[in-house]
Amino acid sequence: MPPLSRRTWSWSFDLPPSVLWPVLADTNRFNEAMGLPPYVLEETPQANGTVLRRGRGKAAGFTLDWEEKPYEWVLGRHFNVSRVFSKGPFRRFGPVFDLSADGKGGSVVRYALEWEPLTLMGRLCGRRDP
Image (cartoon, rainbow, N blue to C red):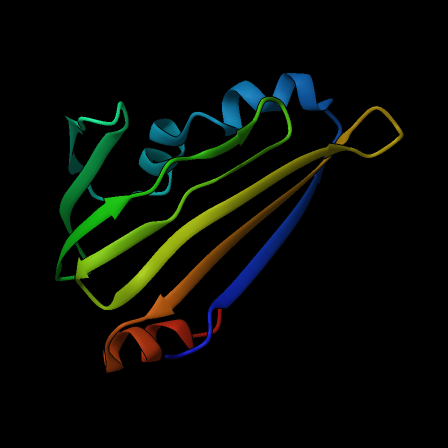
């Protein structure tokens, strides 16, 4: 199995985390601002009380189907989500977001994408420079 790949970006802001979190943690708004295409997410309650979240959409000419795993969420500081694909160039793909105070009244934002390719195209896409 190919190894998990990760690409990370970091930014500093003069605003405190309490001001940035509501804006940056709004993933729907964030995706729209990045120009990502819309997708459909279906939620199916399971007998054990959990919810199965299945998504599908198109991106960069690929038809994508995935199971969206539960978010890892620490209010005001961190979130990540992993999508496990049954169709598309990746086996797994998801963002990791961390927000922290910089000690001077501002914030440091770290945003990473993690992925595991499923196909040759997934390996090639993951090798592109940012």
